[in-house]
Amino acid sequence: MKLNVAEKDDIPLILIVSILIHLGFNGMLLQLLGERPGTTEYRAIAENLVRGNGFVMEAGGPPMLWRPPLYIFLLAGIYPLFGVRYVPVLFVQILLNSLTCCLAYILSKDIFDRQVGLLTAFLLALHPLFLYNSARVMTEVLFTFLLVVSTLSILWFAKTLQGRYAILCGIFVGLTTLCRSSWQYFPLFLVPVLGLLHKKRHGAALVLKKSWIVVAGMVLMVAPWTIRNYVASGGEFIFVTTDAGYALWVGNHLPTRGLDDDALSEEGLQTLRRDMAAVLSVDPDPKMLEKIFEISWESKKNSDRLVREALREMWAHPFQTGALWIKKIFHFWFFYMGQRAEMVQIPILLIQAGVLVPALIGLYFSWTQPRRPFLLVPIAVVGYHLLLHVVTLANVRYSTPLLPYVTMLASYGIQGLRRWGRVKDLPHPIFQNL
Image 1 (cartoon, rainbow, N blue to C red):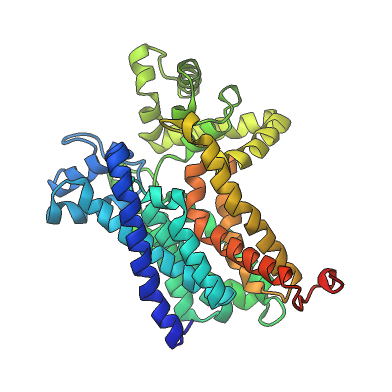
Image 2 (image 1 turned 180 degrees about the horizontal axis):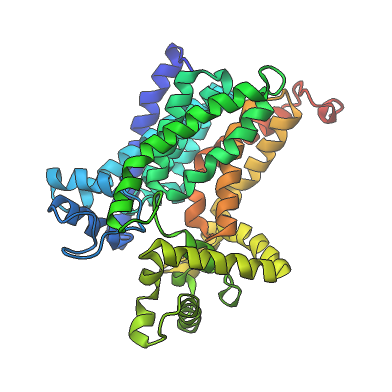
């Protein structure tokens, strides 16, 4: 939690080196591919917000209910200062990514040691997918930053069970939820993690009492947006967004193999649209099919219908659904969707394998050598995020917010292999006779 003099000196070094790496990478990217605007909805909503038109896609249009607000608020804070331009957003995202490297250092140092922290920060700053995210006007950069902040607050709360850290934890989990609504269910994972860490020292009663502070803090952070949604939707309770039905139904739609729309052929896309129209009782007219996805997002009623149908299909086809989920674990870590997919798929596979293999080795070392029980906190974050996307939509884009934790384990794995290679005194009996 506290940094010594050397560790305090590490932070500005990591920040400067990461910024320089990002600037070099994005300079080359701009030369080769031009601007990477990502989803244009974010820019459109932010522009309308700045112009006083409200949280809408176009002036006079219906209120936006399927996009969480925090990233759009960030854009709306940048545009009045620098204009609706790409480069200022890029610089802000480079700074956020570089701060994430600093936070990954602090997290890794707290769980392992300074050497692992330094290696984690620099591996993260060099990871091509992490760098590429900084160039896209999408939520990944802000979400990854907030996720590491949340993880640090959870770690400090888990170590102390102090009320001040519980409040911080609730605040940051709430902010993370306002960036990605999928994070709203994480407290359900947090309670058993705290129970495992403190079952002998403090007991279940104190853990539950402190956990309620986290939940209350999160709800209070999100509540203003929930109230806005209630008013904007005409009386529907929408905690953050209305996109859950789309994600669950599309992610488990067996005829299209659980793939999102931009990964499908034209034939697959039409199948997805027709089947969704049937679930929502929408006329399969070509004009209606073109906007069926927007229809699925525009109300909680439609989202709930898709959730019910997805659950019914999963119950009716448990083995096919289970096989699809297993396949989506691979999709989550390795499958790229978008332009030039065939060109970059093999490089992405090699890049991800190059980090995941040492991360698995690091996970092995961390449990076979002197126990680090609080490693359970980032593992719970990884497990929750992976499970959520295996059940809904899975591709490599969704795995990138986990890179701080993966590179942390990979760094520890590399350190362990170096120690093994030197035949030093490794605590586990398997190494004693080497």
